[in-house]
Length: 350
Image (cartoon, rainbow, N blue to C red; front, top):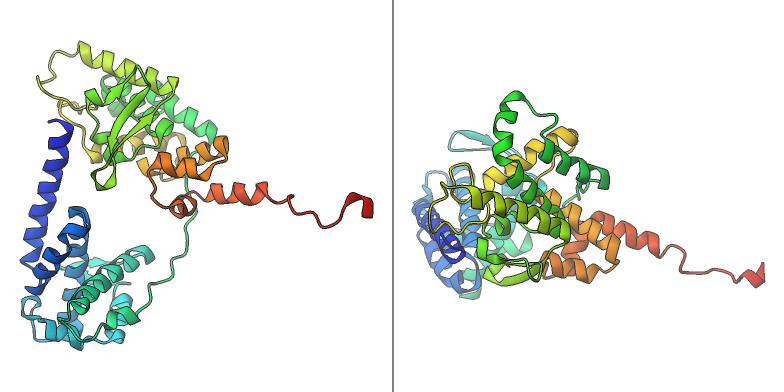
């Protein structure tokens, strides 16, 4: 499967999930999704569908008792008061859906409220409802969590662990010889370029250009970008590609750069698991994910360049404030660098 087909396949699966979820939602929600189709990605609409499913389930349990979700109409939407939505946010602290106990973090609450407000705003702007009480409800305050990332020595330890297999169980060691070259290449690419996990999984052999030390990625929204890599990244990729060329059982026409043991494109879950496997050995007190490796790269890049705009551009952030928000060490370094810039008295005045 080439890169274009990979993203088309993933998009098609999301579309199928949306259609399945729409069958569980009030009929007017389909009108809403059609109306926002050209302004939103398929993944965004899928997340809206999941969030709205929880919201409407709450409404028939707590507000419109005796009705089913499919019975709800736009007239019911008009009757919802701001305090109903505020109670929904409280309900999300601990609730039950399909018989399973659930709870939401501050961020999850904020996302669900954003999904609900976006729907109300759409129908209000189209004059299909006369009031938009959802707009009166403020987003929950989000308390920022500590940014978790690897320190410089831990980066080296992680790559050495993937290379040597030290600290692994016997079961892990059994597979290590088959995957270590690939795993080192994956970890090196994360730590050396700040690539997103979806971008890494979507890479194809033809996306790598060793002449210019660059590679092509498809970013959020489908835009393609050229990123560049260092000698260290080039060495790790070259070793892995050479290893693949010696494999005789890779299916003809398989374009994926990173392969599973079944010799097809590696999955996001498999990449998450391998990052977790090695990081637990070298940093057991830190919950390291592929995104945390991206944070590690972003922090190190800022410390080397001192240019927040360069970091934002390389990481693919449209807004530099997103970069500052996710990389606390950057803001800390900025504050430290300006600490002595303002002089209160000239030395001559002492």
